[in-house]
Image (cartoon, rainbow, N blue to C red):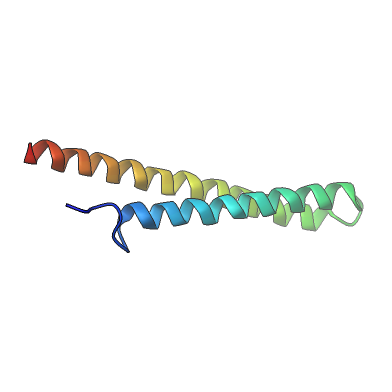
Length: 83
């Protein structure tokens, strides 16, 4: 039984989502730093937008982690039933 490695499985989709969200967090954090240190008087809007994207990325990681947890529990249940 090959559940977790098939294309389109919840594991692969959630893992890709975590990677994408983590990259968004990384980029947004860098934008916050640049907006607040380079030109603080003009960077308020840029910093705000970057902080919103940072929060979106954090929530994306959290949601995809919940998907991974649910998939893990589902596979555990299937293994218990089969055993």
